[in-house]
Structure formats: C-alpha cells, structure tokens
Image (cartoon, rainbow, N blue to C red):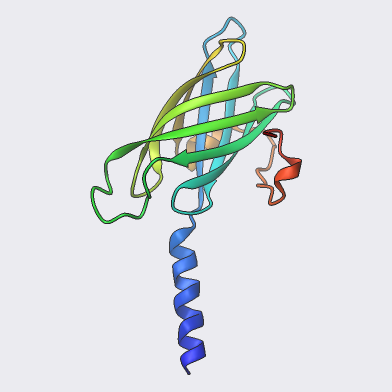
Length: 153
C-alpha cells in the first residue's frame, strides 16, 4: 500500500511541475515584415523548451526560456518576473530575448530582443484560438535530444 501511495504522490508532483504548451507570436521590426509563431512548453519550475516557425518560410527556430524565479514559489504568484529566451534558427540566426512572464502560470508575457543582425523581435503570448488563426500546417514537436537543436552552444 505504501508503494502505491508514493507512486501516486510522485505522479501528482510531476503533473504539477510540468505545463502545457503556451503559444507565442512575434513581429520583426525590419523592412521584410516577418511574422513568427510557435509555442513553449514548461520543462520544470524555471525552464521551458521553445519552437518557433517563420510564417510563409521554412525557417524554424528552437531554444529555451529561463525564468529568473521559480514559478511555483509561494509568494507573489501573479507578479511578472524577468526571463531570458535564446533561440537558434535553421538559417544560423541567433535570437536573444528578454521576457516578462507571469510567475504562477509561466504565461501572460511579452518579450523583446535582437538577433546578430540587430533586427528587433517583439514576442507576446497569445491564446490557442489566436494561435490556430496564425499558424500554418507546422506541428510543434519538442525534441528530447538537444543534439538536434539549432541552438548549439
């Protein structure tokens, strides 16, 4: 009986610690008018994996988000906290973003950053309904083996 109780508690903690996809979109402030869309999926209390596609192009970016404060801490769950997102893209672009994310849900945020060509990216979280309007037929699949990532550092 004790084994079963430990197994149930462990499964419950794993469900609490992980999250479902949060959807994001971005516009680039350059003369090309590029639009990106994608999602991030929380890995643990402070990290999430990210996958982003460029609309109308085959460019794909992946990387991670790092939240500067644990998302499940007891105090101030609704505060926005600083986060960093780093993306590597299939064309060699590296995007470095500063985010503000809602601490308790790891969502409701926005971020701004630049790539190595000084293009400015403005990302924001969106609802699943909005995401379905923007996305093309790309399926978001998060990779487990980081050696396949475009972001190799």
